[in-house]
Image (cartoon, rainbow, N blue to C red):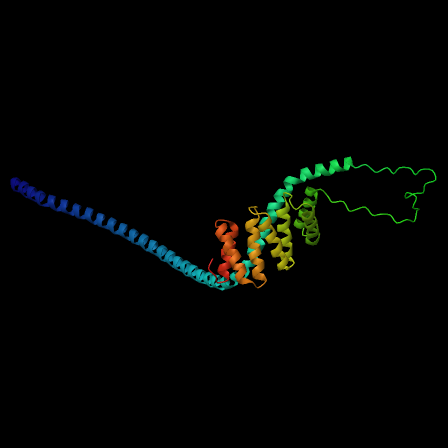
Length: 286
């Protein structure tokens, strides 16, 4: 009897052991599946969030691109509208730029000359002595026996030294006192036609005539620079402004020929660049 009981117990133990092992593996698999499902859910939420951010960025970029396209279209329209007006003002801008460039160049020269001029003025003041008139001889009337009422001869007006006269004229020109500067430059050229600054004086007189719209006299002064002082640093600028003056006088063919001559002789100069722009604005070949 006891033997049979032992056999039954052994059989039951043998049958129960595999079932318990299988049940444990199933529980472990269920836990792993549950963990994977949780991870997949978290990953799906992360993907949904990222997709929402990407949609927002794409929408913002699309709006930005549309705004840029609109701005570029407006800018292109503005440039097209201004292209016609720019040709009309190009000549005046070129003239103003050239005048400003000349003024700056002369300002630099004037600054270098200021100390020397001041020293000369101080030296001249030191050397000036008041004249002492000789006492009349006894019984001789003033005026050399001609009487007090005799007409007196007026002394001739003294001409300033060349450098001082030119510096005064240049200072008045830079200050905008064109009428006074014109008189001083003219006096300088009459007294010192071969002085070192004679070409400059003729050039600035031509520029003053342009400002006064007296283009024929301006052409004469620019011709003075071109004919009397060839090779001077202001020769290209004088030829450019001569061309402008001829065009302003209605002599477009002569003005265009002058500008082409300038381009031929000074092809890489700033004045040649302005001449090409002027010819193009007139619809002519440079």
